[in-house]
Amino acid sequence: MPTRVIIDTDPGVDDALAILLALRSPELEVVAITTVCGNVPVEQATRNVFRVLSLVRPPASLLIGQGASRPLLRPLETATHFHGTDGLGELDRLRNADGSPRYQQPTLPRILPTAQDVWNECLRRYPRELTLITLGPLTNLASALAMDTSPVRKLRAVISMGGALAVPGNVTPAAEFNIYADPHAAERVAQSGLPLTLIPLDVGTQVALTRDAIRRLTAETTDPVTRFLGDATAIALAFAEKTEGAAVFPLHDPLAVAVAIDPTLVKLAPLHVEVDTEGPTTRGKTVADPRSGGSRKSSPNLQAAVQVDGARALALVQDRLCRR
Ligand code: BDR
Ligand code: CA
Image (cartoon, rainbow, N blue to C red):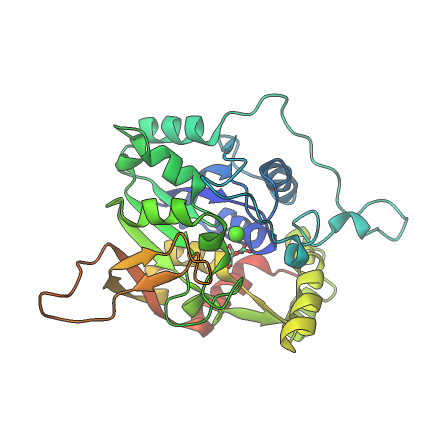
C-alpha cells in the first residue's frame, strides 16, 4: 500500500519538482498539498501549486489549502532572487512557436480552505497513517502545535527539508533558508516530540543537476513535466553560476520526497538539535550536539540524514521526472 502523504510547501522551483516527483511515484499517495509563505508570499505559493498541478493529472480527491502568510515573529523574507519573481523561474517569459504562452495562468477555486482545516480533515480520515513532508518554513506546523490537543499529534511521521548541520548555510554562513525564514517555528517543531526526520543541506547539496545534465535530459522532450524541469531551473542556474561559479541546481526538496519514497537513500542519526532564534549572526542556525556519552549528552529530539546515496537519489528523481 502506498504511503499517504501531505506536502506542505512554498513553491519554489525545487518544491515544484518535489511535488511532481511525489505525484509521479506509485509508492506515495498525495492526499493534500498545503502552502506556506517562504520562497514567495503565500498567495503566490498557492497559485504556483495550481500551475504545477496543471502539468499532470492530479488525483481527483487531492485537497489543497492555504497556510501562513507570515512567519511567527519575523517579517517575511522571500527568495525570489533565486526562484524568480513568480517563484517558478519566470514562466510567463516563455512562448510557444506560435507566440502563445507556454504556461497558462492557473484557475483557482473562489474559496480555498486553510492549511489547518485541510490537515484536520486528512488526520480525521487517516489518523496515525499520514506522513507530513515539509518543504518550506515550518510556520504551519508550529501554528498547529500551539493548539492544546493538536491533531498533528496524530501524524505518523514528519520529514522536513531544513537546516545545515556540519556545512555552511545557504542564506547566511550559519543558516539554511527554511529555518532562517522562521526560526521560532523551527525551534518549536524541533522540541515538539513529533517523530521528525530532518533532511539538511548536508545531504541535499549532494543530489544536484548541472545545466549540462538538464539540457541532456530535457532535449527534444514532449513531456510537460520534463520541459518544465528545463524551463523552471534556467534562472536559478544562472544565479548559481554568477554567485558560486558553477551552474548547478540542488534538489533539496525532491530529496525529502525521495526519502519518503525510499528511506534507504539516506543514513539517519539520532541527534539533539536546537535552533538559534535570535542571532544576530547565527539566527536560524541548527545546532546539533556532537558530544557522545556521559551525562552531558542531550537526548536526541530528531533523526537527521547524515549520509545520502546521491547517485541513487538522482537516478530516482530523473527516472520519475524525465521522459522523452
Ligand atoms: C530550501 O530553501 C528553499 O529556497 C528551497 O525551496 C528549499 O526548500 C533550501 O534551503
Ligand atoms: Ca522549499
